[in-house]
Image: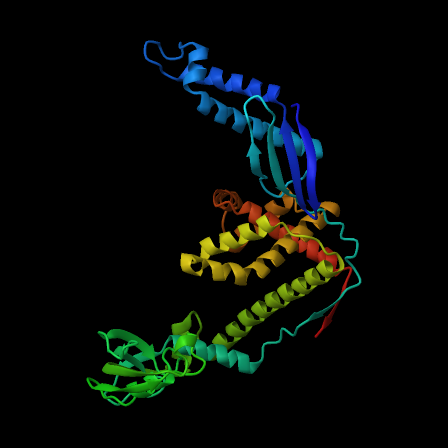
Length: 414
């Protein structure tokens, strides 16, 4: 395609190209668009596709021109990308389109490029591996959490105390001091679900009582406009329930799962928590290594890739529209770190021939099938249908890359 390309900006992984397409080239595309319209449009007195081209061009001049411009821009930016040998990170953006019939069509192309990592410094780093020991105290804390999950809540007639679950009708005065209609709340006292003043008010009441007085809002209240303010509050206590925890005996162990005794349950908890601690320790080591590599080999990250990852997590977590701006700001650094990690893994996997092969994936599927006591072919088909084979290949590749890196760096106990 006969176009003129003038780089207007080149910073890091960003490129801006000024594109100019001569009028005779635009005219060729206008002719193509006119012929297409002539075969499709209906004009009174003519069969479909039989209207004279000159009449079609006159009647649909603006539509034909717009379609021709779109075709020219599409072909021109493809030509520009190929001629400039740009490796794009995402679809380019077209800006400042200028066209006057009979003159050249001009526009600016904004491109974001895939970074090319040299990674010249990837060895000689010192990494600390945190302890993965699971203490008896940690085991008992986990047992206690399991015990909390099996707790029973029983109605009581006493005044509520910290730890009790209450159902209340609550109303706090508005700016004019008027108490609106009460709303029902269920909360556990002492759990931070209500401010201390409201909890104190609740604990003054017996079941069925209504208590009303002014309450002071704490100085660290999330809403700055209410910090330190006093408001009239009204509470009606509807019911109170007190938690009773099951005994830590063999019956409790059997209720938790396939465990005959508490000793067996404790062994299982230790095994699970040790495996989890080991996994978390490995994740931490890999994160430290990525940070060291990035520090020694700085490179830019395509903003579009980071945003795509943020958008994906917002969709996965179902982030409401009102929270998206805050989530975007808070999650962006983590998303950028993930993009950097992926780029490092991809670069080293390609450079050092560490990418997992199809046979590696097959071997992993066979392991999974054996663990499930299932047919490997069926497991493979299920994973393929669920689109998880690529996920397995990625996991195997990452494992190979980090194993290769760890051989070249020092990992010591923290």
